[in-house]
Image (cartoon, rainbow, N blue to C red; front, side, top):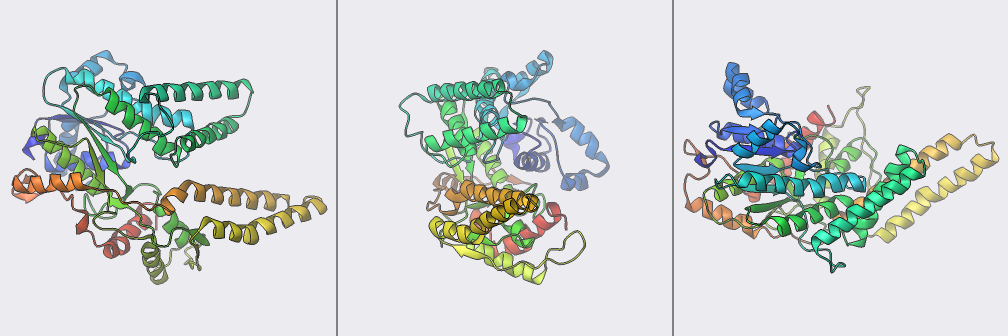
Length: 461
């Protein structure tokens, strides 16, 4: 990986899941990288460098406090900012709020304006002359907001003005912070739905992509769109992940005996991709760009095209795993995962919920009212749980009934070109990057890697 030698890389969102893996991999396969502006690496590097680990890290990694939602990434130290601008060869933006229903103003600030601020900062760095690029982690769907005939920047300006106006109105009503958060969250979902997007996350990221393409000028720009990112397949070690991600919510709920029903299209594909394959592809695309080779504007990173796995298969594998090795609660007692009722349409699901939960809840409310509200606490708690569950189904509905496949031809072409140029992705004659989603056996990965990783790093078994 000589192409990254003596390069300075600026990584935004460096404390995030994907960015940590990226920083670790860069330092491991190219220790002669000049400098990485970010933080957080792992035990594999410590094992490699031993007593010299701290010295190596202090030389290669510079942690910079900043905020992508602010101009110049929130870097107030003028000397530090000037130094970064002069030294930076490559900028990678991993900063994002991935919560599907984040407050609209917050999601706009980080996902949309944050990406634009990174681009503008990169432009200032780019004028110093060397070949540079910017890779954005952008898990988006192709296309523009079909309902709008305005320019992308006009749409963005209108949306931020609307969000600020609504926020001002809410503050003037002397509402609580919780009430304001709820209102701004609902606003984000409303605006996303108006433009045809399933949630605030994808909408704000879509706007970011559109305005960046419009605003990039002469700066090299590559947009990378991972699908559902899961635990690491191999690097820096199998099964590592942080937090409960999209797929994991179903597995965790099932393991804890809380998943009673699920609704999805019968043969729905969950477009999964392990985090280290995302990182390897990002490095591979970067290396190709630094070699002055042609790179495309957009790269889809997913499995639905070449190696699909369907939700019923994931459920079957999870069921087999926890039947053999049940999750244990805080008291150390094994939890038996119960039967899960499956619905293949929202209509049948709503009928079930009405009979099974909503009707009994109404009866409980009437009984509570006639019994001096003795059941009030239980009624409020169950009502909250039902409302929360229905909201989650609405948030994930577009994925549970999705009927599309993401074409990954651009990455496949890049992989073939790399194979024709032996040594491009090698260190000491050993290939360092796995960008082949077909290399994954999903049964082995889910059973022996992902679920054990989920137990170890998230559920803390």
